[in-house]
Image (cartoon, rainbow over all chains, first blue to last red; front, side):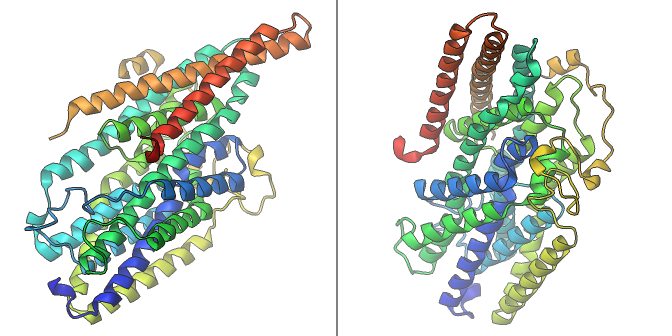
Length: 415
Length: 76
């Protein structure tokens, strides 16, 4: 802990805990869209009800799964005995990078993986603190880079196929009424995604805090998270989820495609199945990427359905640069932090200022539960009644023409 | 390097599971709607259709419970 000696260690740990909880909060509101964007878009759940359910399930999920990983980065950084020691200062800088990126993508309404932001931040800080040798490139490639390409593709393919199945089975004299009934089913699938999120993501912050406490000597090596850590992380992620990243919900729910209840259900069933399979069969995939991929697949799977490729490609770009962008910001923060107490103070002040500026910028054109499905804030309109309207900012991303971009026979080849 | 086998396994299992859920739910909803319609127009009592639809919905419920089982670590 060479570089943090200058700063009182308990102050440093306190700073890391506060930042980690704030990251957990941003993780919550960033990822509300994964589970709740489609039921909100189809009117299966009212926006407020949806985020309340998601918040409760995240809270419950966080308490259900408290087994913390032995390493912060899951092998990405060569940490531990005899290799790199990740210092609280590096974690501090890493968290600053991750939070900045999460807030920037929130402002732009882009769903990006919070885990990638966290790993990116840690990588950036560790590279500055300990050199490139601290990173395991093989694991970076196999656990982060390749899955980032595969997750949306596999989710989109599955959602495409099951959307076709849903439409084929329900075709017939009462097709429209039958398909509206999928709204009820959406409640269950989106709840499962929320619960899975709570068990997965809150755990990451618990890990960061616990490993920092262990590194600082406040907790015995090999012990699990303290109760206050579990409770604080659960509350932070639940609060974040409840606040709801409405900008991201709008992009995912109504920006990618005009989603119907049957498509919404097909997309969520694909997301749930893929997430559960990936977490139990040893090939981790990002929930955010799977959820967005599923919606693209569901958009293509409906006849005359279409996808706004410009929105989809913006989202893809955000995925690809999440890790390097968070890394660069964390690297800068780590460079400054290495100056000692003044550097850390400077980081904290600059970080807080940027966060406040981003929130203020967000207030200029607010997106909330009232206009999340596409209505402008001044229009008094029940959001649940509007199912397929697209907000002007997203609609300007050139809505595609009615005929499918890829013919059905071509689409079948994708599978 | 990347474990293609586990990736393929995840892909196949996800596809089968998602297809099963969506097929069962869609069949249930179609039967339910037709049964309701048949009852309204008094073409038939729609009793069998409703029964089968409810069994299919029950199956979906079991799959949801299985999902909860998979998510909660205490269960396994």
